[in-house]
Image 1 (cartoon, rainbow, N blue to C red):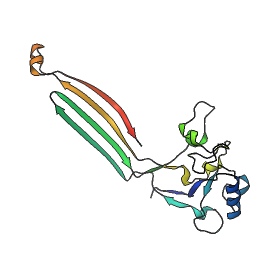
Image 2 (image 1 turned 30 degrees about the horizontal axis):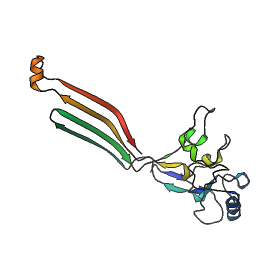
Image 3 (image 1 turned 180 degrees about the horizontal axis):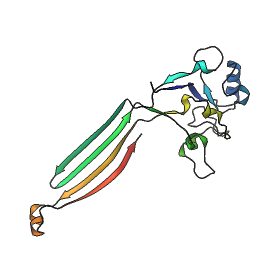
Image 4 (image 1 turned 180 degrees about the vertical axis):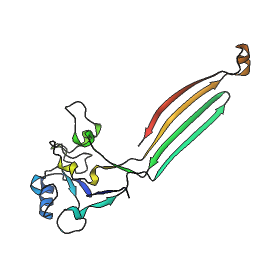
Length: 191
C-alpha cells in the first residue's frame, strides 16, 4: 500500500486562548497536554471520542508518484535548432525530516521556510512552520500531516540551442558539417 498512517493536522495553535480551548476540548494528546504550547501543531480527533490517540490516525497518500512523465520537444528553423527535455512526477507525498523541521544545525544554515514560522510576534495559525523547539521536537516526532508535503514537480531537464552552418561555409573549411551548440542541464524547476 505504501501510504502514510499518521495524525491529521489542522494548522497551528495560534495563541494562548486557542491553547486553552484545545486543552478543554480534548482529554489527551500523544505529545502530553501539559507540554503543549502556542505554536504547536493542532491534531484532529477524527473519531470524535474527545481524546487524540492512535485510533485517530488516518491513511494519507503514498510516497510513490501516481504519474511520471517526460516530453522531448525539438524544432529547426534556418540552421537553428532547439531541443527541450521536460520531466516530472505527480501524486506523491513526502514526510519532511531533518533540517526542514529541526531548524538550523549549529547555526550553519537556515531554510527559507523558517521565515514564516510561528513566533510570539507572528501568532499565525496558518504559518508554514510551528514554533522552534528543543531537540525532542514533539511536533515532528508525532507524525502528522502538517509535515506531509506534495512532491509534484515539472523540470526542464535539458535545453539545447544549436546552429548548423550552411554548406557554403563548410565547403570553404573543407569539412562535411559544422554545428555549434549550447546545452543547459536543469535550467528550470517548478514545484
